[in-house]
Amino acid sequence: MVKRVSILGVTGSIGMNTVAMLKHLGGREAFQTVAVTGGANIAELAVCARDLGAEIAVTAYEDRLEDLQAALAGSGVIAAAGEQALLDAASRPADWVMAAIVGVAGLAPTLAAAQAGATVALANKECLVSAGGLFLEATKKAGVPVIPVDSEHSAIFQCLDANAGRHPSKFILTASGGPFRSWTRAEMADVTAERARQHPNFSMGLKISIDSATMFNKALEMIEARWLFGATSETLDVVVHRQSIIHSAVAYSDGAMIAQLGLPDMRTAIGYALTYPERADLPVETLDLTQISRLDFESPDEARFPSITMARAAMDQSELAGAALNAAKEAALVAFIEGHIKFLHMFDVVAEVVERLTPYAPARDLRDVFEIDRTARHLAAERITKLTA
Ligand code: NAD
Ligand code: MG
Image (cartoon, rainbow, N blue to C red; front, side):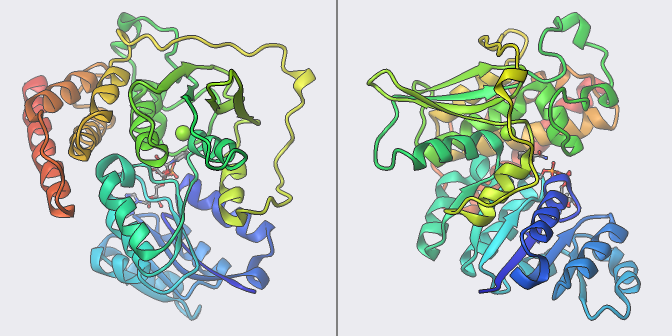
């Protein structure tokens, strides 16, 4: 049976790998592409849409509609633009959606796809970080499964799948430690965005690469694990494992630990989410254990990476703590990329915003999430202005 699929954020790193996996696993004979969406990269969006024979392609930017129309001329693909068009396209009936927009911008479109009945392959961690309880409630109500694509959570999902119904005593979330794993704070003080984006093991989008350098990526993933697996600050351990071979693990109270291993290649997690519960033949190299001379593990240094400490606190609070942390982080990240603040300032901005907004009431609905998101960005902007003055 042909599977109807949509890809939100098709022009990104996860999106393009998803296109490659769709082609590898049968292309148009196996998949009917419903919607593809992107941002400012119109040429690439149009290529993907034509290539897959999508029904509709949407750019998030309203003022780019004419460019997209021109790029799609004669293809039969509908061109659309803007926030509402993105939601409408995501709501088109599909069996499966890849949620690969970066940031909290991915929340509403992913929810729209889930509510329209699509199984969610979740790369966008912000859906859970900012609105975990509401997001899962909505997917449950819609009766759609959520399959994690983030490599660590895909790993835990795979470990749990083999032990259905049994509760781990520990979740072990591995972290590469990023490009500055062993750098001092003084060494990190003046790094550029160009340097910070150079991830040691994974090739990823700009924002998540820099989040790996601050370990805010791991911070978001800790909160993600809370919602996906019920991990708490007590039962979740972050372990720095610089080779990124063990993607994560779970431990049981009988002394057994189950881990998922593989080369650092997102196509395994994407392919698994696409074919679950089956396993497909993927063009991913199998790990050769004899070629790995060693695997290293250490605890994260929270004095240099306070992002981990902030996430642990957020894990035990209402989901609005995650929404505030993520929004402040997104604002600080953009300010760093644009050269307004220094690398270590990102920690200061997030810490101050989170502290000013604590404690958090429970989120009643998405309006609460978007309101705290706005407030956190506003406070972050104030702090950023002070830092640049
Ligand atoms: P990317 O920056 O390469 O791509 C992001 C995509 O989102 C692009 O298609 C872009 O056009 C679109 N986009 C950006 N801003 C948008 C907006 N405001 N509205 C609508 N669309 C917008 O990012 P990526 O590395 O592919 O990551 C995508 C998501 O997957 C992120 O949430 C990231 O944390 C998560 N993730 C990525 C990886 C990875 O290996 N790249 C691994 C784990 C999780
Ligand atoms: Mg990850």
